[in-house]
Length: 91
Image (cartoon, rainbow, N blue to C red):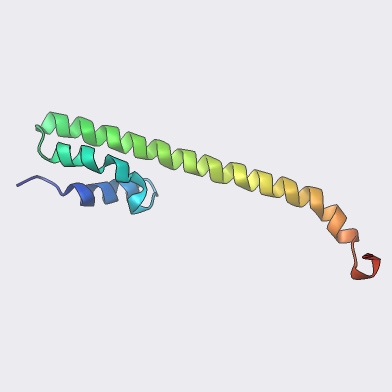
C-alpha cells in the first residue's frame, strides 16, 4: 500500500499554494510514480511538485496584479471623459 494517495496529495499541495485542486493536474502522473518510489525519491518529487505549484501561484498572483494595474490605468484615463459626458450632450 502506498504511503499517500497521489490525487489527494496533489489537491493538498494545490490548496497549500492557493490554487484550485485541478491546477496541478499535469503533475499527477509524477505523484503516482512517487507513491511507489523510495522515500528519498518520493521526497524529491514532492519537493519538485511543491516548488512548481508555488511558482504557478506566484505567476497567477503577478498576472492578477498586472491586470489590476491595467484596469486602474484604464479607469483613470476614462474617468475624466465619462465625468464630463451627459446624455444631453450625446449626438
